[in-house]
Image 1 (tube, rainbow, N blue to C red):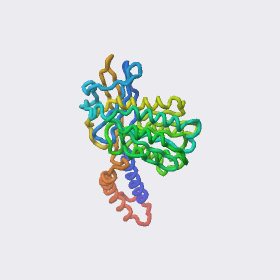
Image 2 (cartoon, rainbow, N blue to C red; image 1 turned 60 degrees about the vertical axis):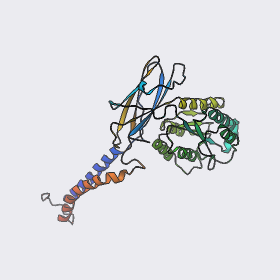
Image 3 (cartoon, one colour; image 1 turned 90 degrees about the horizontal axis):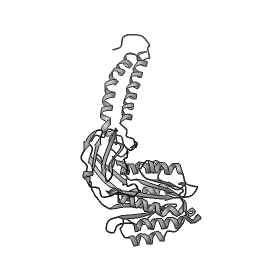
Image 4 (cartoon, helix red, strand yellow; image 1 turned 90 degrees about the vertical axis):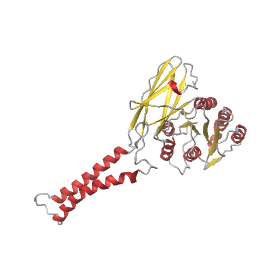
Length: 354
């Protein structure tokens, strides 16, 4: 009986530590309902890529749906978990860093999809502000082709877009992963616009790996799926879990306007930053409230983010958590070992516990 009791104690102790570590593991930021007055606005929080610095991406639109940009920092105020924080704008009016991911698989030849994609990409590039915004192109089919680094040379980008040729299958995940690699280490307003017309069938990278990488970098992926063969569920997750927009099976005639809107929005986005008043990597959910003064009233936005934990992939978490786990095992183990030594043959006598 004692042997059984001892093993049970050890198992219970181990399960307790597993439960504790489970609580430490981080999750994805989950949005709460925004409260708005008059103007419309969107708030996206990046609480991972530069924590304890927290980045707030704020898009404000007037009643006509036009972006409202250029508001000074003192027009905003924010709290995290009810604690007031000091906001700053690290790159007011700074550059946009974008990567356009374009499907060039054979199926893009059907119904003029490649032609519409080229035209939309050109519209996006021509909206770049000279000396400010930069873009790179990534093509995918059987594999991935990076057409160069980020550049502000519009003519070069347009020439590359017009030279896209069709061939092969659909390595969509690899294409998006390559785009994220290009933006790694870049700061400010970063976006990926990823267009495909089918389900992935050639990638080395997995879908979950792409989402985790985008979340780690704090980069939104705007997902666009053309035609009936796309995985709407996958594209929806890709956009929702990274803070991007989703466009599934839009009319090809509307594609250029979609790209125009994406560039217009990111150019007018307010990028705010603050230092978290609780700079611990504890896997907890932090609630943020942001208030701004606009021309016709006050605007209140609420959202939340989850801090990375000590066990978040890519962090040296296991090394930090191992000592307390080991301590817990050492506390329980001696009693268990004493029980086992006193009854090595599995004796079920009822003598007192040591």
